[in-house]
Length: 251
Length: 291
Image 1 (cartoon, helix red, strand yellow):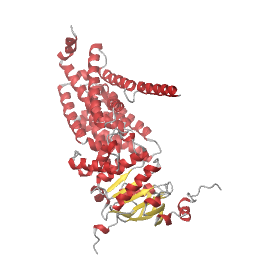
Image 2 (tube, helix red, strand yellow):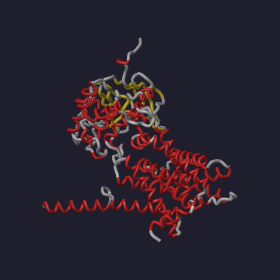
Image 3 (cartoon, chains in turn brown, cyan):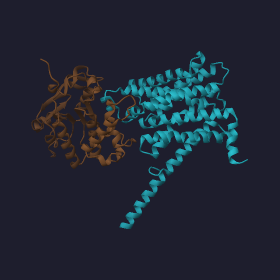
Image 4 (cartoon, one colour):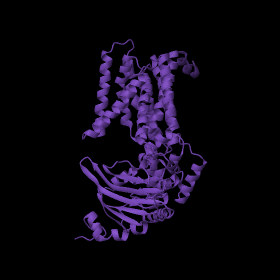
């Protein structure tokens, strides 16, 4: 049977095991993400969320197991521009002398020539992406002069300008107020409804049911993968966190 | 003698014209590179590589190879050793850098002391602007032009590397390769600049112009113009002042860069100390008026 591109999995990690020296970071973890779905990745610090992201991105080669992106080899997938990444706030140098527009323009680099000279279609794609995330009027600001939510939207705009079909977002709601969170949620839902596949690592369990189609519970291995309402039930979270993070009572 | 004649006087000497040419070329090249070094956080790496090329240059002299080749090899060797010491011990990077570059630099000093030579190799350490030969000038010109062209042609990749390596990786680029190319260009630049100010002061030219420009603008494209413009001015100023005061030329060039940085640090319209002080005072005043 020949699989057509429309039925290919967006992300297919199968039995990936990763060690950092003697430390086991991912233990036989498998994750299949279908096209057009939003998936929330939940787990405590050190549960292997970043390692799983890096494995999907191809920054880490698993000791065993395999990774396929859009049905093909990860490097080929990256070169075709289908994979995009929204970094965690702490990973960005917000003093960097670069404007919002220029950040979004870097999404187009894969489609440009050697000297990365922007052509008409690149400017058009950047303007459209900025419009889509409602940052047009802030386009010429230095990237650090945006609010927390606007900063996230700038990086989402970069994914849109890139034309990526698979987006990985690392803690997109950290340091973002509730209103911006709602804006970003709506935006990501629209992208998914257009066929984009989105994987989000998050601590924000309350927001997940509105945003995600499915959730994954990670504790070095994938403990559970299913509908958010099911995965986020207290007894399941206790497996991953060792306690119930939804309850805040003092015992 | 009027001012114009005074300024024209040094230009009647060939050695002064050569000194000025080398200074301007080296200053501009270092300044352009420094924009990335400052943003990546590679100031110490610039320090390390520019010192570590010394034994490479001396060995190249001994075997009659181009200086740039020796410098490249030892530049990369230094970076590899630093990475090796950092990754295989519990030492932090600054300690690894400190150990590697001082050892290589000392090796260079020892090599110089035992190498019989008709040119004074000590000039590599302190620079010898006033003794630049026509051949030196050609080497600086060619190396400088090649390095400068690569930097400018691939500037967007270097800037992306400085800003977001993960994104570069996600686009299927090879960030490690981009970093390696930049380090290679750093080693080449060191060779150009050590002609002017010597190994010890190269690091100043690799940090100060970019840092100064960064305080003046938040657009990278403007940094790439401001930094070389300031560095070239400091270079010309330094050479002239050293001529009239009969002072160390390399020293005066770097001193001029440092003074320009100080002025910018104090008076920069947005980030300067004085602007910040006035802003705080005005805020206090308006608060006091409101209450």
